Image (cartoon, rainbow, N blue to C red; front, side, top):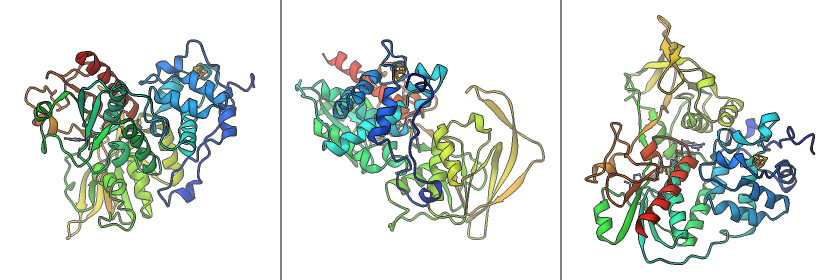
Length: 460
Ligand code: FAD
Ligand code: SF4
């Protein structure tokens, strides 16, 4: 093992690309016990575990991997859950290559320990062997806190506060909790039963989740205080669709990625449903992030002949996870780099038929540090399309800020909050995408945990 330790990283088994690209079943199969043991044995259980510094919720990585080595899988799952209430979800969607695994010492001379795959192994083992997971003992403190939004940030904050004895109610606008984990990320990456199980664990701890409850419409934050909530954590996300504002975006079959993915994920538009979604034979997805990749791979599973992914920069600048780009390519998505649509054209029924695009080249880096795409003169060309999914990012959801006097927002509509989540309004905290703008699941959870600590400090 010593010689192999640096290179012998175990690969995640996956379903073949030409089979999985026709259904919504999960793509990776998961480690079995043998693979988990070989991979865990690579970990040095470092005294100064630099991998932990790369995890926004500080999961005790060497300890949980040490427990795997001893075959104590349920203990390993319980250890992770002390820091992260959603391990089965995070192990599937976190960009580990830019977080814990980026810092793993083995990565300096070879390949980092597959921390995410091991986390998934224990989370799935627990699901199979222990219904619902073991719940910690909770000493009630008699105070209650309201959380707005049941996405990863709200759920993480809820878990932390509940452990400290607070009565916690989460108000969620949609009919299902999970935030992007439920309505954005498709089932072939994150099966919905997993989200339900992880939310179920929090409910088992005593967290109350009220769905179909839009704060700012049904009730305001000030009304929540009047009902006895001592603090409020706003975790309403950045789920507002964004368009490029180019001609033709109002044609039929031009979708926002939010609508497209929500209809597929929450309303089962791919199955026999009251809300089917039609894509025709040629689909163009615009964008280069995780959302674009999810939209393209979901579109492919609806049966068109071609799915193009149109991105204005090159492969190197794509913000999507490396693994997702790789999967999309394997499954048959056609990438068109350095290309940007400038207008859409339609037929006499106002159905989209063409995306008119320009070729781009990269110039100096912009504010994001990525090289700025600039159009190449006279490079206009057309692609025949039957549908378009615009996945160029999202914006702050304005409902809560608009209904809360005294809550400061920045010029883009995001709530202004400090590192621990304090906002301009007393006893109101905020975190996750509604503060940072679109980020990652684990960063949103990290913000939720920090806010829980600040709420606890302010109420005690
Ligand atoms: P959200 O997950 O957006 O949750 C906010 C919740 O608040 C929602 O459920 C919403 O319905 C609810 N809400 C909003 N307004 C109200 C209101 N007024 N009253 C009550 N409830 C309200 N990150 C990764 O790390 N890995 C990935 O692979 C990845 N893939 C992604 C794929 C897609 C398609 C998208 C859109 C994002 C992806 N991300 C990924 C980003 C990640 O999902 C987000 O950064 C994260 O979900 C943010 O968490 P949040 O809790 O702040 O917000
Ligand atoms: Fe194990 Fe790598 Fe973390 Fe060290 S840095 S404890 S080898 S995962």
